Length: 321
Ligand code: UDP
Image (cartoon, rainbow, N blue to C red; front, side, top):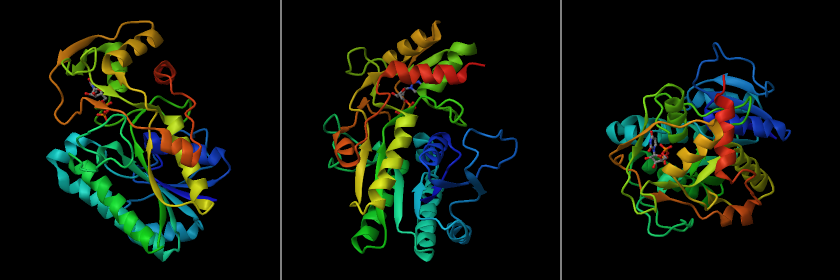
């Protein structure tokens, strides 16, 4: 198939684009990031279009020029705390961009979308691991933009305009050698911050040591970025075979605390990660673990790297000079 990947040059987008190309799809990446200074990558077969996901005419042209059959939509703004302080750009990029893309898809007669949603759609969690039918009541503007996109897709599916799989990501982590390494600007994520602390300091701030999780630090469901990418490939196959629209957690069902992640990184590095206790980060839930059974049943997704030590080892190896 010819597949458009929006946000194809981000941390997760690179893994998705590469995985689809490896599976034999023709991939077009549509991303705002300029191409200057980029080294050729392993999957150099990926066609690169530089553009803004709110630019409907550019999207329509791209879909038509490349005879696109299906879209994987990852482009968007992703920092939860920033969305609280400055909500409007989140609505603009994540929902405005989603509407522009859906209009372009209808204009170009492209009817299938795999959408990058988030565990942030759930909000205050009543049961762990979280099942897909859990109440959706997001706590942040970021989560609300993701939920709004899910609602829009549900409405379009109901009238047969677009069929979709919304993948609710838990914590993407780790690296795919030569393809993607976790790096954001600004960096807020645990593993890159811990690796930076190990390399040269300052020490890693551990946000909260008084959670009810055993060792007191917050617990998350870490999914290897290569496994996460694979879920997109399977979701596209599902839609191509006429499968029903649905929302699925991309989760292992296993939880690891911040202290366990740090200890695992220390094993992979063979050196300590300097840490300092800090206050809880506003908006952080104590634990966030997804029920991962529906995606196995519906798509046959089986994570190749559910083990935390595999995930941290891949991050450490990719960051070695
Ligand atoms: N965390 C931390 N120090 C950091 C970054 C993150 O203690 O420098 C904690 C954070 O509070 C959360 C977990 O690590 O409990 C995972 O955070 P991350 O930002 O990687 O992902 P999130 O769960 O917020 O999407």
